[in-house]
Amino acid sequence: MEYLKTIRLPDICEGVHPVVEDETDADPFNIDHSKLETKKKPSSQLMSYASEIRLIKSWLRPSLEELEERKVFIGNKKHRLTLIFDVDQTLVYSSLCGNQLSTTMRPYAQQLIKRLSSCFEILLFSAGEEAYVAQVLNILDPERQYISKALSRKHCICIDTQYYVKDLRVIADRDLREMLIVDDNIFSFSFQLDNGILITPFTGDSNDEELSFLSTYLIELSNESEPVKANREKMSLVASSIYSS
Ligand SMILES: [Mg+2]
Image (cartoon, rainbow, N blue to C red; front, side):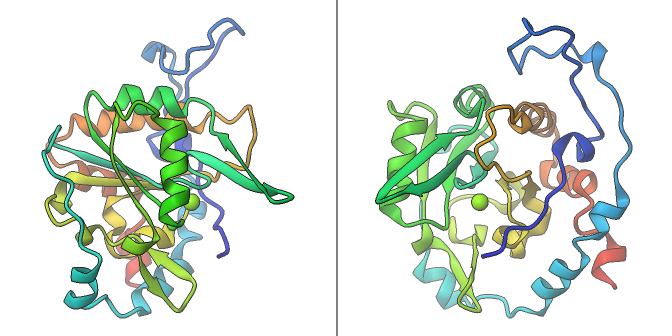
């Protein structure tokens, strides 16, 4: 599957941009909000998604039977909001070195999950196979303290034999209005664009800092009474101008 170019979070979450004054300020979450700069939304980048959204609009929605086959229950709800993380190129980068799979964790991934687990229920949802996702879960949260459940390819809806869509309606015991999904691929949340937060793909760069921006954005959303609606407004992914074009 081709990965789309995505928008940097600092550009979409109303431009929050931490200014790190010196090298010793290494904690990405210790952000002094008085030092935040504001950047304008790059409307041309947002509009670049128009063709992807047109393609999504052309797809038939999965039938109730298809959703039923993939249905999953999470169980006891730990928080009002459920935050779902994609795995590959969102939290980790995996590549084959000979026959050996090498997995690199995205900078701040574990800190982010730990921090957000105080205000969100956290799930993983990957288009990868179940065994692989279990392996990554063991790396990210070995003690199973922060991540409630990991969903895999068997829970995805496959479109045109190449697009694995994570239709959030398969999560039977959660409300769509209380779920957000972070993914580097817009097709992953094709059927719930309002719930999606696009993140720049991680390809192993040890200086990547997207997750620190994501932390700020998500904590803001967790304080919203209607977080999905707030996300829709901030992401502008489903702006009427795009949908109607
Ligand atoms: Mg991904």
